[in-house]
Each structure stands twice: as C-alpha cells, then as structure tokens.
Image (cartoon, rainbow, N blue to C red):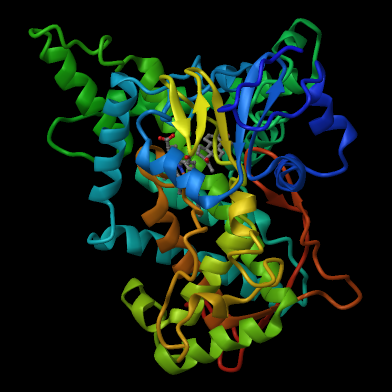
Length: 492
Ligand code: HEM
Ligand code: PLO
C-alpha cells in the first residue's frame, strides 16, 4: 500500500512499516544470509523498504557488474546515515562520501600516494617484512614457553604499523598505550557503525538515548584526537621538498590549492579543508587496519580447520623458497597454492559481504527493472561468492578452485567473484592488502605450523556481521617447524 509496483519495478517485499526489525530482531540470520535466502521467494534482484528508504538488493553477478562497472558512475553515490555522518563529519571522506568533485579529487591524491609506495617500490616490502619478522619473534617466544596465543593483537599491530608507516611515517612498539587505545576505539567503531547494515533503518531512533550511538561518538572522539595530533605534528615539520607519507601528500595538495587561489580553485572549494584531510586519512588508516587483519584471522582459522591446505602451502614454500632465506614479493609468481588459498579465503568470508551501499545518482535501470534516482543499492557479495550455480559446494573451503588442472597456475573460475568490488568505487587498498597477506602468511607458514591448543575446540567459522565480517576470538598454538625451533635473535 505504500509502494506502487509497476511492471518494470523489481519484485518487492511486503512493505511492512517495521521491516527493519526483520533484519535486526526477528531473523536469526545476519543480513547477508537473510538477503541470500529471500532470493528463493523474490528472485535474485528485489527491493524492500527499510524505514523510509527504497533499497534494491542485488544477489547475482550480472546485475552486480551492471551496477558497479557498466553503470558505475550512475551508481557511484553513497547514502548518508546517522552513524557514518558521525564517523566522517558528514561524509568528508572517501568511502562514505557521496560522489562529487571533492570526492574524485581526494581519491586521486590517495591513489597517487599509495601507488608511490606500491608494487614497484622496495620500501613497502621492507616495511611489511620488518613487521613479519617482529610477529614471528613473538610467536617464537610464545612457542618456547608452550603458550597458546590470541594472535589478534599481534596481527593488528603488524598491519597497523604498515599503514602507520604509509600514513604517518611512524610505528608502534608492543604494549604502546596509544596503540592499545587505538585497538579499543576501533573495535568500538566496528561494533557500532553498521548495526543496521549501513542502511539507516530508524534514523529517528537517534532522538532517544542509544548506548550504541553513545559508544560510537565516544570512540570517534578518541580517534579524532589521535588524527588531530598526527596532523599537527606533520604541519609543524612539513617541507615542500620531502614527501614522507600520505599525510604529507595531502598537505602538499592543500598548500598548492591554497597558493593557487586564482582560478577560483581554492582549498575550501575543492574540499581540502582540515576536516577533509583528517577524515580521508582516518579512512585509509581504518580500512588499512580492520580489513587486512580480519582476512588474516579468517585465513588462520581455515588453515587450522584444513591442515592439509596448510601442509600444501608449506611444501610449496619448502621447495620454492627453502629454509635459508625469507619469502619476498618476487616469490609470488612461484607460490600459486598460497595465492589460491588467499583468494579462497576472500571468497568464502568476504570482508564486506554487502560492500558499502551505493546510490543511484539519476533515474536508471538494472536489467529490465527501472530504478529511480536516490534508490539505495546493496550488492550482496555473499550471494555472489556462495552462488550454487557458479561454485560447486560453495561452503567447502577449497583453494584448488583457483588453480588450473595441473595445479601450476592461477585462474578465476567464475565471474561471480568480486572481493574488492569493481568500477568507480573499487577498493583503493587492493594491491597493498594483497602484498601484506602474501608476505605475512608466507613468513608465518615457513616457520610455524598452526593448530588448536590441546583440549580446545576448533575456532568458529561463523562470522559476526558488521561493517566488516569478523570472526570470533580464538587461540592457536604455533609450533616451530624443523629448523626453526630456536628463536633466532642476536642476543641469544
Ligand atoms: C572500499 C574490500 C583492504 C581502502 C572497499 C570495498 C570493498 C573493499 C568490498 C567497497 C567497494 C564498494 O562499495 O563498491 C577490501 C578488502 C580488503 C581491503 C577485501 C583486504 C583484503 C583495504 C585497504 C585499504 C582500503 C588495505 C587502505 C589502504 C578502501 C577505501 C575504500 C574501500 C578507501 C572506499 C572506496 C570508495 O568508496 O571510493 N574495500 N578492502 N581497503 N577500501 Fe578496501
Ligand atoms: C573501521 C574502524 C575504523 O576505526 C574506522 C573505519 C574507517 C574506514 C572503514 C573501516 C572503519 C571499516 C572497513 C571499510 C573502511 C572503508 C572501506 C572498508 C568500510 C569503519 C570496506 C571494507 O569497505
């Protein structure tokens, strides 16, 4: 009764005024699983009302690619929501900012800065390897006293230090109070920012005191103080001649816009306000930490569940790298089984199972369905990655899917695979994340075999839905492999 359905409109769920409760209260399943199941009744592309918003859910790769790639610009908008507005000062960042000249400009600067540190450059590899080294030392120390470890803080520290080097040219030691604070606020943000799948279902709820919103505001304020501090430090010793990191790159762009005030292009009008710079760095820092850490945690869970996969990777490492040197980026081509395993982890547990919602910037269509300007579009990557028509036994963890018949080369067996999205809004950190995953996992598996501590049950494969799909806490034993029994440090 709220929504007239024409012949060209996608199938529509009954417009229950409180459909939101279907997501967060009544269904035992997280949204991505529920959205996948709803296909049985409504087909692969359907729409529903969430609060006052019309939302189209896409569960199949043909329509997903039409939205992201073919009509990428038309669907490049982002919705504004109560929580992301708090996180990003009303969308002054890249990930949650709407499509605009300012957004394009920021994306370009960050892209340029990340490329500078990118594939060709040796320094990023050095930074990651130093962190891998430090991580492996911690594992050795724990192994020496037979301690089972929650790897999460150490994995996070390694990944944080990489992104810290890129953003701020700095890093954290173990136990650094600033780092501990960051762990806490970031978890608080992850837990609260996407409670309702980033499609604000009840924006009016904010007029009531909400413990989630309160926690979010608190955490964001702690984060902002940290970003502000880094910003002030950089401004104090900034020089036009050296570019140390991403923050310097943004400061340089800001300065040159300020000096170039002539043609009406000033720093404010292209959106290089202090707020924009802070929020953009906040995005890269947040995305850089939470995504890669989450994938590493999933990868280790699957390696524990599938010891044969772990052994295959170790055999490959033994024969292609050996024991006398550490893996490096140039080994990527000769370690296809490890690469296939990383691809399979990204398939079976996508970091962002619903991506970030897109918005139609003008009247358009998806397949045969008409789509009105302002419609929100949720791409259900979970459905794409678990589509029975595209993947045999989608719930089975099988790196072999990504190998050719001889097992010597990599393939992508289905078009229904988009772990980083695609098109105008494709992930900015794909290359960086892949380097980190490869180096950290290869260093760990060259030196250790991972297993559940005696008497513990296997870690859960169930994810906790939020802005990223996180695994539950678990502990592992890292047993040194032959030849790696002793912690090799100079002091010993
Ligand atoms: C966006 C995946 C790591 C920065 C995204 C999106 C996905 C994604 C699915 C959303 C695309 C869309 O909405 O259409 C991943 C995965 C990662 C990863 C699986 C790790 C394995 C990173 C890292 C960084 C990063 C390390 C930072 C260096 C971003 C940014 C966006 C984004 C800034 C927003 C792009 C935009 O809206 O224009 N990522 N990401 N990501 N990612 Fe990543
Ligand atoms: C993670 C918690 C941080 O404190 C803030 C932050 C910033 C950017 C977000 C990131 C969080 C979660 C993962 C996101 C990223 C932007 C792109 C990335 C949403 C909320 C993905 C996977 O889409």
